[in-house]
Image 1 (cartoon, rainbow, N blue to C red):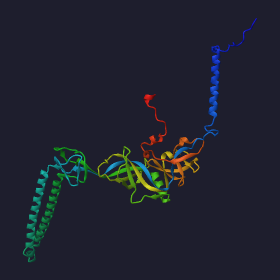
Image 2 (image 1 turned 90 degrees about the vertical axis):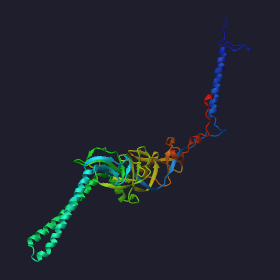
Image 3 (image 1 turned 180 degrees about the vertical axis):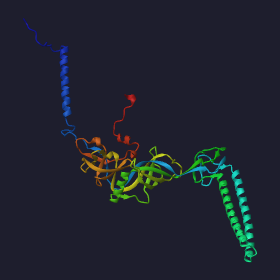
Image 4 (image 1 turned 135 degrees about the vertical axis):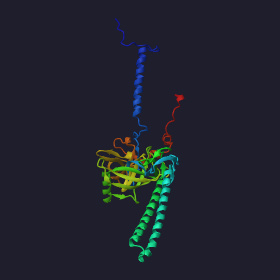
Length: 423
């Protein structure tokens, strides 16, 4: 009996069977994969080594030493430099209001008028009393002068002469009382016309025409506030004040030039007020409940932009640090263990360095020690530090100083984007 072969043999020229076609396709796939593997192992150049990755670019700033002002930013409230309460010192009916609410008034400007008729009558009566006293004085003086030669000739008794002298002195005193009454009546009559005690801006009227004012108390009529210049009251920690004084006495810090420290205001929207102020005084007493010291500064306000009661941030420059450095805040890593920066040497190697950081000034830190002039400190590109490899230091440019088309310039060598319609 004849046994069939394990694999059928087709004769030449015949069409291959499906099984043979599958075997051939599998062989071609294996050959293709082997060719790809060899191509991947082939160097990009004929016989050359594999290309090395270029150093990563990092942004750096060059350290420069100099005198840097130490600025403290503290919360404060604005206050009018002068505040006057306009009150009625004469009792009567308020007849007129002679100002526009919310306007600027000058010192001595008439604001209100109170019914002055009773005071005018009192002034007239006082003047009449003074005239009567002066007439009595004239009569008493004439009688005394007539008695003077007669008493020397013993024509009148000394008692009569003494009575004439006393009458003349009493008439003189009555004249003085009359003058005082006239002056008092004139003052009360003047109180019927209410004027502004200071120059400033007046608020709303607190009473209206027809109201009875000054009856038993000095009724408040309005408030005038002088808002140019303005005062700003703020507080600072007593420990900070003492530490600053000790540092200046030890020569670590320098005093700010001029007679007073410079003050800048930061408004609620984050903008800085255009005009600088000056520190007036620091309170001698520390608040026992908060441990704070109260300070006051004076700020010009010619346009009336600042208003009393407004909340502001006060930037106070009290001293200058010598041989200090200004670094962007993102260049400094602050931890409870200490503050560090990344320094790039001439060989392109980045290493950590401990530094001594003082106060903040805007978006920068004041570095008081740990760096030397000319060293390069990393500001950005920290994520590119891998395995301790070398880096390429390039000058760092603040984001606000970059040109608008910086992103377009950086991507100029990239392939153009494919339009949506072509996808």
